[in-house]
Amino acid sequence: MLLLQLPQHRNGFVLAVMMANSGGAWDNAKKFVEEGHHGGKGSAAHKATVVGDTVGDPFKDTSGPSLNILIKLMSMVSIVFASFIIKNTLFK
Image 1 (cartoon, helix red, strand yellow):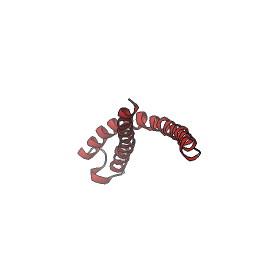
Image 2 (tube, rainbow, N blue to C red):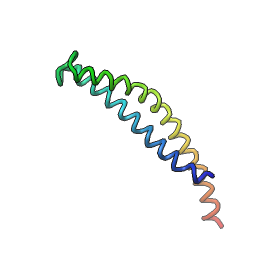
Image 3 (cartoon, one colour):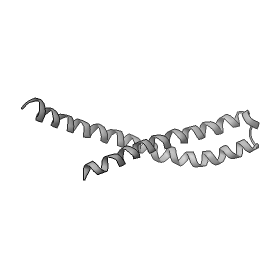
Image 4 (cartoon, rainbow, N blue to C red):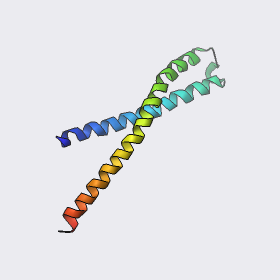
């Protein structure tokens, strides 16, 4: 059963990284337009980046903290399995 769940965790990790990065990119795009690029505030580009920032903020706020927990969990599981593998393969 565990082997069937492993690809789902890997896909979830990739999705979380994508969400954290894209949320930051949308926030940076809004700041870039607000500096005066592509028409500045009030332009169509600014309206689009405000919508993107509205989507990007929850992406950053939800997936960023969950990545920290997932990385800690993955490192603990790898330490446990590494000691198990070393004990059962190298010292027989």
